[in-house]
Length: 43
Image (cartoon, rainbow, N blue to C red; front, side, top):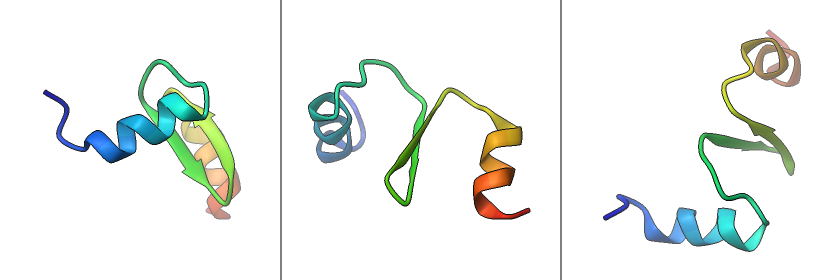
C-alpha cells in the first residue's frame, strides 16, 4: 500500500505513472534531476 493515496491519485490524474515526480509551482520534474531542481529553486 502507498503511504499517501491522495498524492498518488493526484499524480495519476495528472497523467504520471511513475515516481519520483516533484511538482514545484505547477512544473513537474520527473525522476531525480538535481540540476533542474536546483535551477527551479534558485540554488
